[in-house]
Length: 397
Image: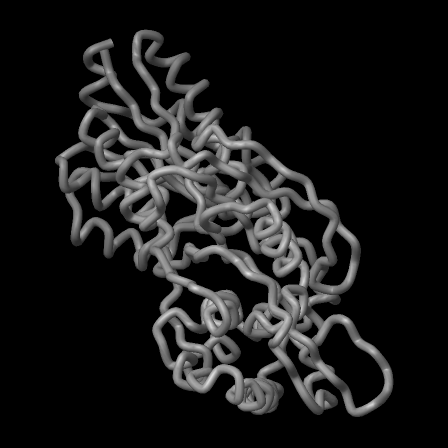
């Protein structure tokens, strides 16, 4: 009897990680009826973070009305898990108390890039205010820690909007009262006070990005353009950000020093901004998920591992879930397969150069448009997995 582990990240715009795991299970059960199949939906801290971790932690979901990154009202949810339901490795990795509650929060539900049409993507006019509203609510519920996933963000405001929702007060040159300090209004701020910030428990930020806040490899330069910032505006945006952060130094003397820390530029500086006022620690996203699900043990027990995502390219080789799954499987000499909607040949070459017990295939068709591939992703994935040859397993059937 064969034991499969299927562990997929999402295909943006078409199939969720749950969808892909379930499709793989259906195909494998049809081909190998006597096999056992373990499923692990992966998350990089973005879309699906709350659902995946809360369900696995046997937690509860809570709804909340917030303001999204461009000022629209939106109903979102977050999770709360009893720490006693988590395994000891997670508790140790996150440095949690042995009992109590941990809130699971997803930045993307309130400030997600995927929620905005292209014409609305503009870092000058997006804010993390809604994320602060969620964090404020978790504080009211008396949780002992917050686990915040910050993938897929639409913002570059260094968490300033979130700090506003948490009680920071911004005074403007005009008499006009603006509750949400969008970056476009920073130059009009004449004073800022942090005396009324609400209390929050320790915050663990799941993040696999090591960029600093400023500079050539900083948040604005690297990620601003994909969020709608023109190349000509990068220098101006950084200057405005430095000015407002300088005004924070009477309250937070190390504000500018902290901007040089690895990971301070993740999600437009979300974790950085929170770290000025709260106890914040960055944790590696894949290690978090691996500990949450005991992935290394499941790989050791598997005869074959199948993983994948929407696109497998060079960026996948730097800490993304599917590549880490492949690396662990190879270390156990467990054969593995990466299935992606599209693959970059350079990344595939790099994989084969390093690892010998794996294969990489695309289930999308290069002669189709992206929209057509997204529309038929389910059918293409199923058909591709049906045709894949598992040499040792097929011979035993």
